[in-house]
Figure (tube, rainbow, N blue to C red):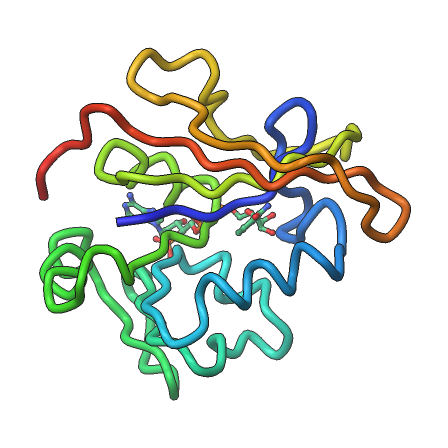
Length: 166
Ligand SMILES: NC(=O)c1ccc[n+]([C@@H]2O[C@H](COP(=O)([O-])OP(=O)(O)OC[C@H]3O[C@@H](n4cnc5c(N)ncnc54)[C@H](OP(=O)(O)O)[C@@H]3O)[C@@H](O)[C@H]2O)c1
């Protein structure tokens, strides 16, 4: 399975249960990668979306212990339930989309991580793992930096040499 995230130069990803930056080109990239696919998230990420509504045109799997039914989402009470649900889909079509806790939990199981690097300090409160410091993650490809809403961003692909089975 895959993971997709935007990080600042300290690998920060969020603050006050919101994104650090609102970037049009990065959002387009996210939609292109995830539309028609299955996205997996923690409860805080669902609650951070406009109206706390799941993402359109995607299967939304949400880990929310104690959470009630949400129209357009599959609410899982436990991590085991999440894994059981994910197994129903082609691993190539599954994307972990946050937040910090969900990324940390699922990172060892992911084959690929699509990382948007933002060359700025967003003064984050929550962080992603620094993949450059992990032996089994390798930077496979990196696009040129481009401008997006006044920030310089670069789309990167990291590959996990030893993903854990699930
Ligand atoms: N930069 C990006 O690309 C990006 C993408 C997505 C999100 N974000 C940001 O990330 C921040 C949210 O991160 P977060 O860590 O607070 O939220 P999160 O991972 O979305 O949600 C955390 C909650 O989900 C449940 N959960 C997640 N993993 C679990 C696990 N392994 N076991 C049991 N329950 C689990 C728990 O729910 P309960 O508390 O209900 O038990 C937990 O409190 C926000 O600032 C958001 O904007 C950034």
